[in-house]
Image 1: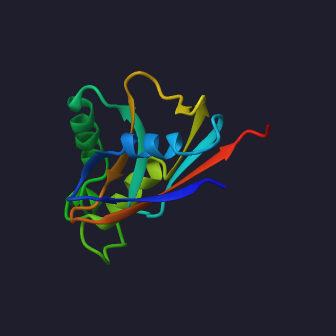
Image 2: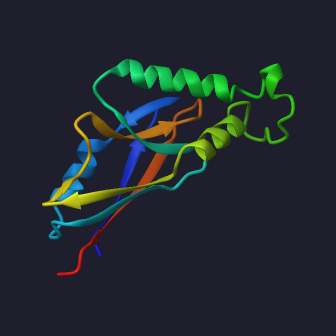
Length: 143
């Protein structure tokens, strides 16, 4: 069972592309066809397949989610109860709940079947740096 774990060091909120690292993992497997599962082992960040050509897309996504779920210090978030780890904690959980913590990507001929402008991103929702762990699993088609 091809399985690996990546660690991504974040420096704060934003999108961190890791497509190349996953491509390396897929290329190193004996299976040429199957389904790749990418799973992040945290509740305050998420995973995205997103455009990797225009950095404005990443900036706009970050700005949108900041408006959608601002810090609990914002008066609009007075209803939030969970504040144990700071004003960015519960908004990070909300953002992760609205996105995804697992991705399924088809693999054919030893390559992920991503679109031309698609890349894999860790979407960090917390203000301070974190070491995020991502699990990769390639389930191969039966011969």
